[in-house]
Image (cartoon, rainbow, N blue to C red; front, top):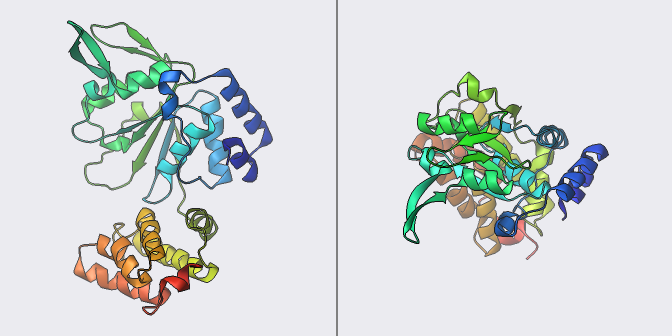
Length: 306
């Protein structure tokens, strides 16, 4: 599916689609970065969210996608880079991410000291979309780089080197989950450099679209039960009855793929969902939820047209 076709199918405002098309024509992709422009594995579903995100990026703004686990933040970020036809640079923040890993480090090459460019530098140079994953885990050294990178002046001053002027097509998209270990509140100065979208939890309609897209050949009744299973777990997690560990859409999709090989659905769910929790009492709660949705005697033929 072509990116603009995806927007049309989701009834995105035609004016926005025309503006995206004009953006793609105006900003071509450098040959050295062309390999970073790729179609995401999964499309993002959500007309209002797409319209907000596209509108912000067209106006040169940066986006911060916040929300709970399994709300599609990274999927949306990857889809936006594809929609705009820009090379994507994924930067995952952790305790070891510092200014050097973002901008670049000195290296000795051809008998001279040269800068080995980091992802933020390359993003600025080639007009890429930088995806800051788990931005609320960034330590102070990295945050100082983010302040300069996201500033309206669009200039990064690298000590010992020339200033980096951000390409006109460069945009940055941050993602953050609530409550993960190692996360912290973003300071006001950093948040002010973003437009913020609070991602809503998955609903039945969206989840069914994802299952049908990712798992062609799945039987309607079975897909409805797996959809219900995920939504039941989501509700329990939001109510604090279980942790968010088993609330894993990637895990459920991976489990369903193993069912295609002939594995019993109940065993697949254990690997993809139940065993994501390491608390024995929580597992019992999850098992009870699974049993109400996925019969223990189901076979692969009950889930897929094999």
